[in-house]
Length: 142
Image (cartoon, rainbow, N blue to C red; front, top):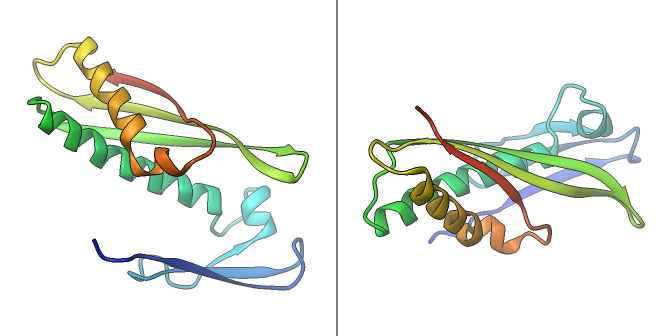
């Protein structure tokens, strides 16, 4: 596996400053972010939003891999990762993470799908690194 990284620059105070986010692959190339974009819904990037997107992408690949190894075929999967922000005794904190997974898998039972979805939740690389155990809703699409 190739090493990947991201970095960020920041100038100024928390509420009045501004920064940019970069990734090695240039997927993110000087994407701006501010206090307002992170905590108030203003224009710009939000680190938690980036975490959510990355987690959803990682989960989809984990589910596809695990289902293939178990001899099942998932035709398509869509995952949304919802990150809930709150405050703990040290300040702003991610207090919850929930996956909503919907897949198309002709001929697969909900019971088998639920098993595969749970295995992917447990074995996804992001799940292994997060301190908060993510929750999940998984269902097969009609």
